[in-house]
Length: 97
Image 1 (cartoon, rainbow, N blue to C red):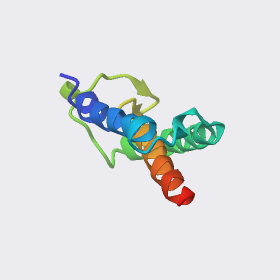
Image 2 (image 1 turned 30 degrees about the vertical axis):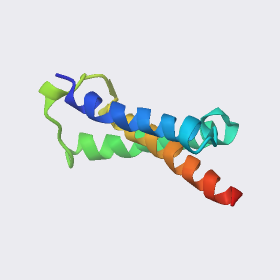
Image 3 (image 1 turned 135 degrees about the horizontal axis):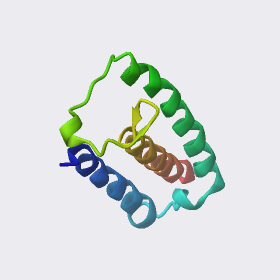
Image 4 (image 1 turned 90 degrees about the horizontal axis):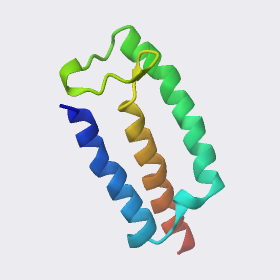
């Protein structure tokens, strides 16, 4: 039950811990982070319509929450969230050096 959510949550938690306590970049608190987040979430929503609506990509319905934005499962947005924070945090950390 909710396997995709259980797979995505550790990535979200890891990127938040990385940002806030390991690298101490606090990217998640910046306007730039949320601007990029909105932009990439919109792109994720658009392209997921094609990928899951076609269906190029299919999911096991028994392991999902079945909450969707159009054809896009809400679980797909977890990875975008993690990527924005994780990449932004690492980038910010190395930019300081």
